[in-house]
Amino acid sequence: MSDLTSYGHGPATANTSPGATSQDSNRQIETNPDDAAFDAQEEQDAVEQAGEGSIIVDSDDVATDAGYESDNNTAASTSLADSVRDYIYENGRRYHRFREGRYNFPNDDVEQQREDMKHMMVKMLCGQLYFAPIGDSPQNILDIGTGTGIWAIEMGDLFETASVLGVDLSPIQPEWVPPNVRFMVDDVDWLHPRNCFDYIHARHTVMAIKNWPRLLRRAIEHMQPGGWFEFQEVLHYPISHNQTMTPDHPVAKFWELVNQGLSNLGVDFHAVAGGRLANTMRDCGYINVSERTLQIPIGTWPKNKVLKTVGLYWRTILLDGLQAIALGPFMRGLGWSREQVEVFLIQVRRAYHDNSCLMYMPLHIIYGQKPEHNY
Image (cartoon, rainbow, N blue to C red):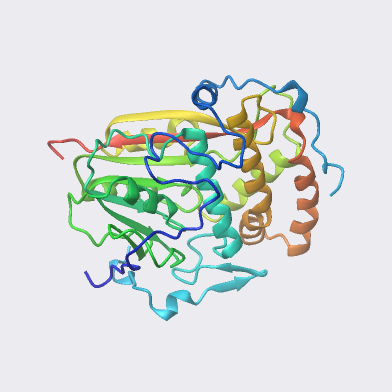
């Protein structure tokens, strides 16, 4: 297949956070030996608390953190041609040239590092790479919106007999990867025959997908009977564990404006809210649809060491990506000037360090199966 470009073979060199391991990575998370080790009970408690909405608060860490007062066209599939590396520069940040305007967030080196940190945070929270019951030997795996390719690479290490394909708008993945992992520059168009994949994975794509029913119908056509499609998507709006956060809180205002801007750009940023994405899967013919929600703390207010670390990661990710997240929706979607955005972000940065509201965001894990017969 000429449009499918393999990025080479050899040991994976993804930009992985210290302590990340892909060996047996869907079963247990190993930590950097230099860090405080999490025992098995702590990890189990973290998953249970995050899943049940019963995160125990660290009463010694609910004050304001230091620093708060300071400031469809298949023919469009491409290989790694030089033209694909021709990125748009807007407001000092690099965006995709391929299918310009389809994705409203940057893809520069800072954003790539943030995406890898996000991967480690989710893996630490979940304790595994996937939830769908795909068995011990999936053969063909597709990762939609693969980004830096870190999830695809770790799945390739975990399932050495599987063929793993990562698809993304930009060629930002490492050149040296496991021999069973490949990447392709595309916008989720389908070059493969029907009944091809037995597992399709998509994570952090809610800001990019404009037509969920179309994606789900095309996916089910290209899945093997009995195959699974899994989403792992964050509902990007802060919720207060102690119900003390008001709508005019700067962090709440920020995410409401992001949602408004993306809505003006045709993106349903809250597609996972209220079970809507799960219901759309059912409407598109999927069976055995399951949804679970984990709470991602923002900040260091949880008492559990794993959740405290997850919260620190997540707050760091959100702060590091604040400008990257804001510029597209605010300027393209709301018509703000660059100066207006930067002034507004000052108060948002400060407010993220306020632990007293016990903020978190829900991570929705949704998966469904293609029927074995009559599809």
